[in-house]
Every structure is written in C-alpha cells, then in structure tokens.
Length: 336
Image 1 (spheres, rainbow, N blue to C red):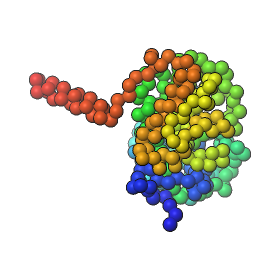
Image 2: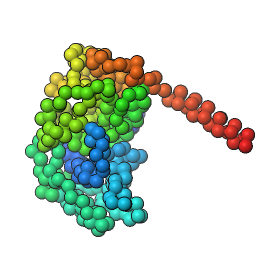
Image 3: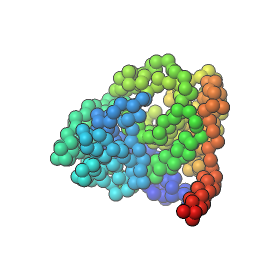
C-alpha cells in the first residue's frame, strides 16, 4: 500500500510524507496564492532592511501577514491551512473570507482584490510572479488551479516542525539575526545569521527579480538556513544552508548528519526531508545539520564566534528557568 497524505512513518504523524511529485501542482497553486498575498504586504508595509517587511509568518493554523498599515487602519490576511480558508481582518472589526479549494490563480486574485475593495481597502500589486521561470500574470493564470487539502495539511505539518526547530536554532545567536519567516518568492521558510561585516554586491540572476532587490537582501555577510518543499532543481523537500559570500573551503566542510550533502547545482548544503523522517531522532538530525553548516560558514569565513554565539537553552533548561520565574512571582505576591 502506498503512502499518502497524513500517513506516518515509525508512528510519526508530525513528520508526514511530502513527495514533491504527489503534490507539485497543488504546491504551485499555493505558491502563487502566497505571492499575491505577499505582494499586498510588500505594497503596504514600510521598508525594512533585507526586505524583512515582506515575508509571511507561521501561525497555529497556517500563515499570516501580521498587521499591515492602511492609513490609520490595520489589515491582516491569514492562510488557515487547517480549515482551508483565507481570512481577512481589519482593525475596525470588519471581516471577510475566501475558500481555499481547487480554483484558478486568476479566480483567487480577482476575488481577493474584490473583497479588499468591498472593505474599502483597495490594493494594486504587480501581477507578475517573482522568482519563477516563465511566469504567467496572476490575473491571466486560468490553468494553475490544483488544491488538494490533504497534501496542503501535510506541507503545513512539515512547515510547523521547521518553524519550531529554526526558532530553537535562532536562539543560540547574539548577533544580528533575522526573524524566522516564510519568503513567498522562493516559497521557503528561513532564518539568517549575520557576521556584522559588509558583503560584495550580489550578482543577482534570479528569475523575474531585479538585481537591485537581491543586492539589498544580500548586502551583509551571512549564513542562511531553512526548509524548502523543492522544485525542478531539487525535486524533493529538504532543509538547506548556504553562506554569502561563500568562503573558500566552505563546500569541503562537514554537513553534519547522515544524508546531508552539498548540492553543487544549488550551491547549498541540503538535508533531504526523507532523511529527517527516517532518522531515529528527527529533531536532533535537523539541529545537527543547522549547527554544522553554520559552523562551517563561521569557521571558514572567520566570524568572531565568541562575540556572536551563546549557549541555546535546551527544553529542560527552559522549563527550569520558567519554574524559577514562577516561584519568584509567587513569593512576591505572598509578600505584598
């Protein structure tokens, strides 16, 4: 019997199968929908360094734009990937929603823009998809329409695990570090650490993305890691890690756990999702990969690790710290 959405391996429903070939059409449709919502955020949110104002964020049931300013009002758009709804909320209490179901990108685009106009929040966006080859403008894409809710739920389960582990990895850094966020252009979930030094202008070359946009994103020396469901270049989901500018000797460094390797075509270390799922301890495998590949970038790049790093507390240590804070709070209340 073949595996399907929601199936588990070794009793691990939190790490469901996610073979790209099984849901690639759905992945593409969802990618285009997130680009439409992401471009709304791009149009409304004030500029931040490295384009940090444009990503989406993982929530308990999907992804969100977080509040976006619209004059004196605030607008928030959420992908509910559990109940399969796109929810629109405003600071003055107005609500609207779209069903996430098999429907074309053009149909989704038209209805979302119509709902925003009905809420007196009209928004104009560039209808051309970013970072994809041969893009079809959103309002003209009547072909991309697949949406298999079961595979979307499997993707969201994997995304939740990635979000949790990337946040834990992020906690071990004292230097400048990005939020853990979902970039809708490349359709990946990422966190980026910075050495504190500048970087040479990035050569660019990403499809349908101006080079000046890329240069803003990569204007500081960095080590970046994340989770990606894959595409034609790597037809499987994987965790990844890379450095910019890439230091001499970086590719020869250890990638950490079994199954991890350097993908020459992508110029990145990758740890296939299937290697994680089949590991005796998936969390340990992912964290080992993240730490090993960051260490490779920092070591070969000559980062000042003593100033930039700290011990990341384990879950047990976090619980003990919370208990101490709770006891201190109880004592304070008792003494008043």
